[in-house]
Length: 418
Image 1: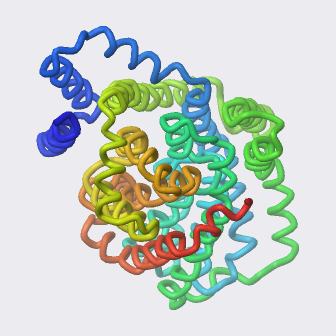
Image 2: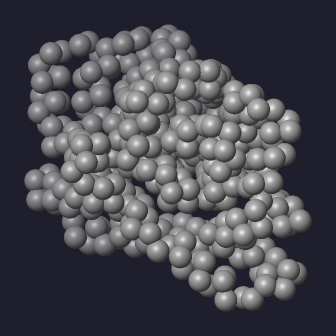
């Protein structure tokens, strides 16, 4: 009854357009009153849900991405990507894909990736005979890499709400992130090869671009290298990366003023507040589900359907794909991860593998209608209609679904480090 109350309540929130965080609060109050619980656990569990040191990494990584975008770092990464792959047929599209991988290795956010890369790459692509919808589709599809290649904000959320190692999640995201980049690069080549070569390859330009972007390239090295080597935690890496990004942008590149930095802090604070409010009330629901042994009941129910791991993962993947059509990644992650993870672990599936898989599947929801957040960002930045953008995205959807099938069939692509 509790599970159905949550599902029906979420459906009502989506239909009437109520913010998910407020909806979770209303659902929690309804269940507490209906079941005659004391109200004190609501506050206690909400506070406990936010009392987590790794959560500090989220606002820090968001701010790192903002500083990178506004502080001249992103532009240097674009120049380097252009020198590396700009000579390929459909070269500017390849530049956009590779830049998204570079940017994703710093910001951990698909929305930030699409916004920053789109603002720099869509207009130049239009000037080189790319149609507006195709140029935007390349940027939108490539933004998915930002939440798979480490660092990844969705993986931080998954790690916090399921008590899974964030460092291992980051490690597991490296190979899938590279494979997604390669898959999208091939698709971009097939879709944009008629635009011709963007520019001739010049070794001298590559050397200059590499020299100019060297300080920018140290950011993902600091973030990922520090975490994987065990020198510091994901949260500490985010703090160090932020200090480094501020120092480079303000004192070396001199492209970020103190006034603009304060504005970025305010914007980051607003976005963080939304995430934290959502996480607080999701923690209350997670406590309710656990206290009433809902995950254990789901294990029994799913075991009655099948004990085949691949079939179970396929069913859960289809369910998550449908959820992604109607719910944004963050609320879907904080609501469903605590519910699903005990189920898959009980049936012998590695939680790190499932965390990366879940991040990728819900990430696809960001670029699919009707509520895909990155789709709307792309429409705004690229100045294109939704229907034209979705039509141009169809080949990229196919590529991403084929990659999902590969991850399901070959778990070693994610658990490569073991």
